[in-house]
Length: 333
Image (tube, rainbow, N blue to C red):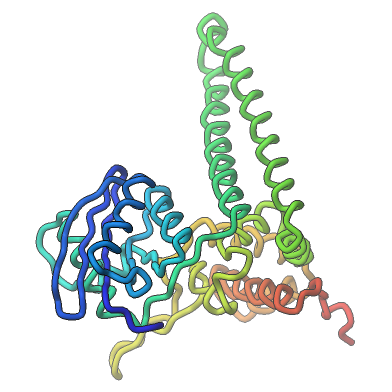
C-alpha cells in the first residue's frame, strides 16, 4: 500500500453521500453531495481544482450493496484508489461511541482509513459479466421466495369451502405458473452469461467435477469469489464461509471449545452444508470419513463442518491446478 497524502471517508446513503476529507496535517473538510453519477464526477473535479492530487487520495466507504455501487463505478472509471470496508469492521474499530450521525460517521471512516492504511485492501470493480450475474442471481432468489409464498396459498384449500377458495384458486395457479416460467428464464440467462465467458465457464466445469457441487452452488461460488480473484487460498474462503474452526482460550483457566464464527456469508455456509450432505451419500471417501468419525463418537455437526472444510480445499485445489477433481480413494488398495 502506497503512502497517501489525503484520506476521504464517505458515509453512503440512498440519496446522499456525506464525506470527510482528512490530510496529513489533520485538516478537516466535511460536506454532503448527492448520490448520483453527475454529482460524484463534479465532486472529483472540485477536489482537483482545490489542489488535491486525486491519485494521492484514498477513498474509503462502507459496503452498502447497491447504494455504494455507483460510487465504486465512478471511482473505478477514474482509476482512483478506493476500498469498500464492512460496516462491522469500522464500527468495532471505533470502540465505545455515543450517538450517531452521517457527518460523524464520515469523519470516523476517514480516520479509520488513516490509522489502518497498511491493513486496508484496495477494492476492484468486478467484471461486467460478474455484475450482471450477481443481479440476475438476486432476482432468482426473490422469484424463488415469491413462488414459495404463493404456493402456500394452496395449503388453505383443505380448510376452506370450494366456494370460498375457488375465488383465488385459478389466479394463484396462474401466478405460480408465471413465476416458474420467469425462474426458468433467469436460469437460462445465468447459463448463457457463464457460457459466454471462457474463464468462468471453465471454472464452473471444474467446480462441478467435485461430488456434491451442482449448478447453483457453482454459480454462487463464482460470484462471491469474483471468479476466484477475491480469495487467495482455501483457508481465507473457509473463514468467509463460516466453516473454519477457531480456538477459544485464555490463560490456564479458560479453555473453550474450538468453534466456527457466526460472522460469515450465511448463504454460502448453507450451500456448503447441502453439498456436504450430498457428498457423504455419493462420495466414497467422505462417506467413509463420516462413518468413521461418527463411530468415534464425534458430534454430527462437527463431522459435517470438517467435511465442508475438505470441500472448500477441494474447490481451491481444482481451480489452482486447472484440472478436474479426481477421487483417489477408488485407487486405494
